[in-house]
Amino acid sequence: MKKKYLNIFLLLLICSTPLYAKKSSLPNVIVIYADDLGYGDLSCQGAIKVQTPNIDKLAAEGIKFSDAHSASAVCTPSRYALLTGEYPYKGNNGTGFWGPLSPKSPLIISQETLTLGKVFQNKGYATACLGKWHLGFGDDKFNQWQMPLKSGPNQVGFDYYWGVPLVNSFAPYVYVENDMIVGYDEKDPMVFLGYGKEKNTSIPPTPTIRVNEKAGNCFAGATKAHEIYDDYKTGTLITEKAVNWITEHKKDPFFLYFATTNIHHPFTPAKRFIGTSQAGLYGDFIHELDWMVGEIVNTLEKNKLTDNTLIIFTSDNGGMLNNGGQKAVKLGHKMNGDLLGFKFGVWEGGHRIPFIAKWPKKIPANTVSDQLICSMDLLSAFVHLTKQEKELSLEGKDCKNILPLLLGETTDAVRDELVLSPSKSSHLSLRKGNWVYIPAQGSGGFAGRNGGPEAVKFIGGENSDLEDGKILPTAPKAQLYNLENDRNQRSNVYNKYPEVVKEMEKTLSHYKNAKPSAH
View 1 (cartoon, one colour):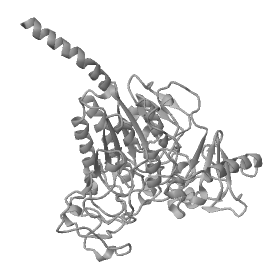
View 2: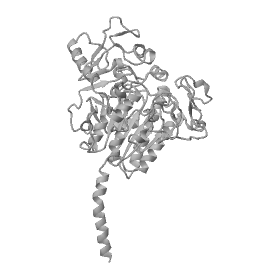
View 3: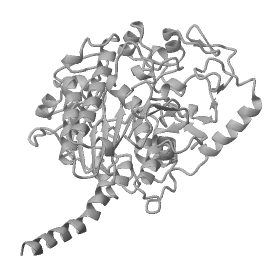
View 4: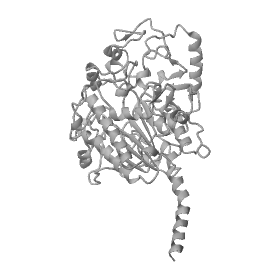
């Protein structure tokens, strides 16, 4: 009798082993998407006024890309590109996405298009988006913020969502879980007052902060939900959500899109991080971000998930020279290193970003790659990672498969061209090989001290078109830079290489005339 039961047990074990092996062979994937983190904001990227040991450790144990870019120098368009693998200038029926979405915007990602989340859902993964969304809610022309919220993260590839629906510097100042505002009371609905009417509400931007860098609240009602929202607790809250979600799904293959509000202004780190850096609140907010990364890594180790988890760490665009950023610069911090420009603009500082990947025993440790890549290339990489290239069509997508680069399997270039979007469509630009062509003067981003020539002067930057914070009258009508010997874009060689300009104009025109995204 005992032998009979033993045989049955062995049979069950043998039958179940292939299923277990198949399931465990699927790697977990985490994409950590920082907000406004510049190329020079990490100590492993040369920063000396801030210390980022947890992120530095990722780089030391994996691969760091020195020529990685976001498809846009603006938050919403870059997130659209990341999740869809499509250039944002082609979206919105060809008119493009150029700036941050307003609170009234509907969901801008088509529910029919392939997204990062859907790639993993199609393979049976648990998926979650935690943190900043800023891609709209609802199917109508205007989001009315009626509960439950219509189409959002849950409809484009994420089983679970918890976070900040828009951005931490603009209303509505509430948290959202899936399709409901956290703490929402139907007897006290949230009501949109209209832009410019922020002073008509007694509800401040948040109960904990009122600063010049934060817009007023253009919503009334939802008193309890607004009271729950706390800038200084947001980083801790979404990190706790990530730790718990990973732990709950440790036996399943999972994909986590962890989109932090760090380090978008206003700079509101938890109290324990205030004063820990040498770059003011700007640097303290980076320190909190580094802690958040450490908590996620520690959770993987605690649950013995480290070896089977691919972690990608990157940013949505370059650093922004806002009030807090200017204070950091005065303290000696270089948010974008020696690169020219800032968030919103098409100069390198606006879109060249940190990009680090770690996967033990798969990605060679302490590796640096100078290959040109874009964060939107992750869509194709993940299709190939999950071996779904025959099932999932990438037709109409603009992403390239960078998986061989991540794994160190090739040193061949995966992409030679990249279209770069600033906040102004007039400055849609082209990277081709080592050349960058900008079809206009200036950065195509903010003017004044927040960006553009005056900002370059403020940080002591150099550019041959600029003098004393202004564009010279003799400056060429457009810009051409050779990044091979001028990565910091000090010398505009537009007049020196007319044949290169002609070729770049022709290629850029081809992209502009491409069929708009149907999504």
